[in-house]
Structures are given as C-alpha cells and as structure tokens.
Image (cartoon, rainbow, N blue to C red; front, side, top):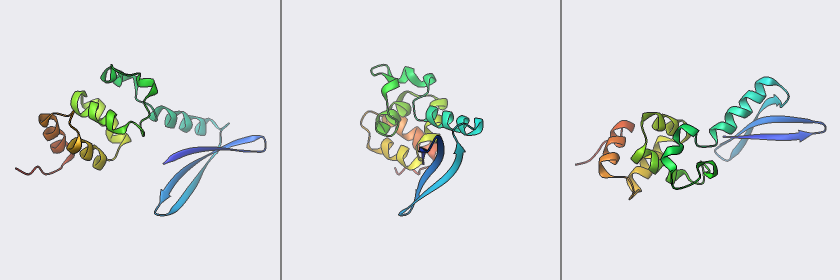
Length: 128
C-alpha cells in the first residue's frame, strides 16, 4: 500500500493506493488541508523510516538513509540477530511474516540460535 498526493488546480488530495491482483485501487482520503488527512500522511511517512528507537542496531550505517523497502533484508537481519521484542513488533507491522521467515532461512549473518527462536516465534515448524 502506498500514499499518493495529487495536485488538482489549487488543491492537493491524498489517496491510498493498493494492488489487488492486476488491478490498482485508489481510495480517496481527502484534502491535504484536512487535519485528519494530515495526521494519516504524517503517520505514513514516519512508518517509511526506521524508528529512532532502533537506530542503535545500525551503528555501521546512517539509519536515516535506510529505505525500508530497498534495504528490507539488511533491516530484518539486524532485527533478527540483535533486536529485542519491540524491534520485532515494529518489523512485523512493516514486513509480512513470510518475508521475515525467508530472510531468516537464507541469511548467513543470522545465527542458528536466532533463526530457531524466530521461527518458533513466527509459528514455523522446525524439521529435525
């Protein structure tokens, strides 16, 4: 889901945009001058960055420059290996569990101990 702001004449209007199959669905939110719409836009923009409470996990890079979509694997790896529950709660709001499990299985930087813990946490059966 994405937030799109379009300009028509003198006004700006916000829409939620999502894909369902091959269709793209636009849901009208309202004028960007509306305080309710402004709050939704602000919330969406804050969710598109790593929260400051998790910046300590990314000591070797500038967390402000991380793109949560483009750098998803890197962010998930750090959270799986070094994060606490608050970091995982945030990750589960942003990323689907299937992606988190996939990164957990494929990553070489996540220890086996962490992989097993998060697989159990996310409800995947572990084969012996």
